[in-house]
Image 1 (cartoon, rainbow, N blue to C red):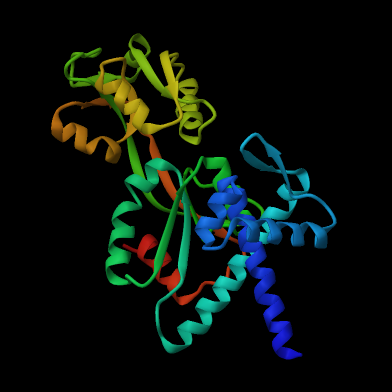
Image 2 (cartoon, rainbow, N blue to C red):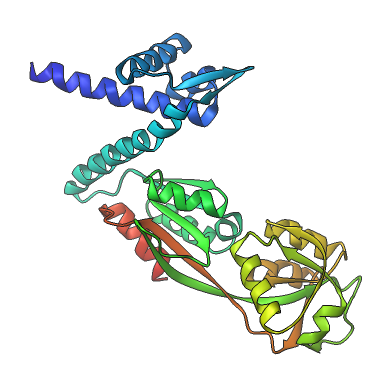
Length: 302
């Protein structure tokens, strides 16, 4: 009987894995390929779960499948169960003093590309047997994923502590005024803050954390910039600046390559003092494995 119970647990976990795969791919066929099973097996796993839960988890829309309200409710619990099981496996393996398992990270694009890139490369070189799964998401989605324990860590700018989430700042980057040297809006290397109001400005979208802080800074200093475009992506803002569409406030690290290539120049602005904190999020009460603890320390204590 003990063996049968163990087999049942493994089957249930595999059904949950199938369910999560379908939600991510929105396709029974692709979920089958990723889990190395047949498409009929995927259908059977979902039917078993739906029968146990007494409700439909998916509905079809054209060629894709989407979660029902019940499916959306069930998803974070399924992800959490799988994550807890994975952490338990890792802890057991680490009894032999071995690094193993998977670390899942959700990050906004700019942090993943600039602050996180070097840490990931260093960690993978030292611990090649550990799988680092990196996923790019918007700020709000990362908080939700951390809260639901769908990821080990979240990386955001202007981190905020929330119920069920620990937030710690591990780096800061100065916001600087950037423009194209090929199409200058400002012709002196040092300007006064009020001069920003007289030029075309490429802004962070007002809903982004960086956009909110910059807007508050302008309001506090009674500056009304001439906003020509708004984007929620640093790379789009940089591209607009390189093309000479306007000036922008950008984190210094993100324009270092363009400054070196002379496609962007940075101006000194008297009265401008803005820092962009970068932080790591993780669930309150998180049980760190040896592997995840090592990664966390490498990230926060370079």
